Image 1: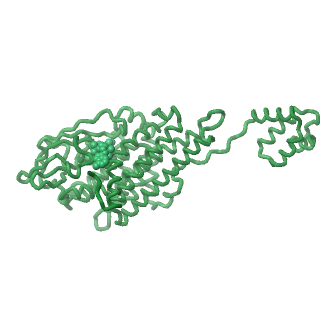
Image 2 (image 1 turned 45 degrees about the horizontal axis):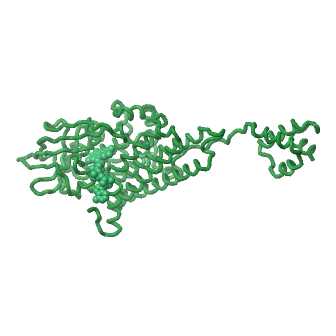
Image 3 (image 1 turned 180 degrees about the vertical axis):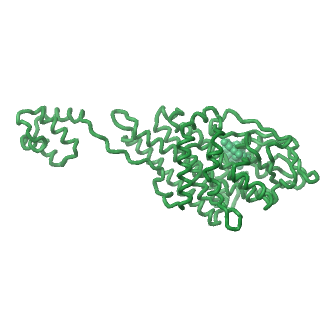
Length: 458
Ligand SMILES: Cc1cc2nc3c(=O)[nH]c(=O)nc-3n(C[C@H](O)[C@H](O)[C@H](O)COP(=O)(O)OP(=O)(O)OC[C@H]3O[C@@H](n4cnc5c(N)ncnc54)[C@H](O)[C@@H]3O)c2cc1C
């Protein structure tokens, strides 16, 4: 029988040369032979020959199967975009890979923003996709386009996605939803061309989650102008932007009103916030408004109370859900690439069951986040989204993003906490996403109120 085996697995091998038999057997086994037939024949070999075959097999160099392509769009949710949106998405992906990826960790570590990239960034056509101009000259908000492009930015650098979200979402969106036609005509074209960069000032040093009833910054009518006094904190883009939409409480009627405040206004000052551990590339400012005089023409004419701030947040919050999606997307893809390359015990990390379990968990959460954000954006485009839909998307995606980035970090061992491998940056950046534009708790309470009919905020 041994002769028969040898003649089949190693033609020409001599009957008495058991050393060669074992090597040939090992070689044959690595070629994916008919395992059942070989197993039957293996049983005919004597003990020493089997031991030699085993040793040869251990030494045999088995070419690993080619690793599958890495693609965080596991459910193929983004394969049927319109040609225009797909073209912009590819432009954004190329730009982020070429210009931002190589410098992202360095700028993050130094807590600086790469201002030199803003002109190129502006040419990507993001705002034209997010707010397509209509035949009658008006603009429409395309939440799906905003989401997909935001995801692409965050997949490489969450600070870039937030930079866009503050300018094109919060600031532009405030003027679009709450400004008069004249105000829109004055500001929106400049903002579309990135000639005027916007910021959004709602949060204050002493009031974040409780802004609905607790804004302390005041506005007081004075002839044909308003006097703004107070402080704002955490205001993204405010250290270098051209205008800030400031929300303030009217001392006369106690209602919240909105103002377009140029950052060159006398009495306006800003200092950069230092020491962040998340989204360090994003520039956040602490603003002081020391009796800043703003003409009535710069008061947002269609903002009459906090419900109008909520309208803006309702539109932009799903964008934050997409930042969370992009953050998880980037971390997952990098963790998978690492698992495919890094070897321990002579095998890739990706071949270990426990690492595969982490990867499967990550892609499952990521896919659920993508599907949820996409559906809420579709509802928004159809005019059917309500505040609690975007609150759910933000809450769910930010929470699960945090879990995905933690798994990604863990799966990379020590290198997971090194900036060099980028996952550490996503891990830290997820913390900001979790807390801004309505913390996890506040968005949970918005959903809870919709479900039960009872507000449980206080
Ligand atoms: C990176 C970054 C960028 C930001 N950019 C901007 C910006 O551009 N413009 C702007 O206006 N703001 C911005 N913010 C502010 C952000 O929106 C606030 O941080 C957020 O609203 C939470 O407010 P807070 O930090 O004051 O926390 P707090 O309101 O003090 O909350 C602290 C904790 O208490 C919890 N909590 C509060 N109230 C309740 C309640 N009723 N029930 C249960 N739990 C509760 C919160 O969920 C949180 O866990 C930014 C923040 C960050 C971190």
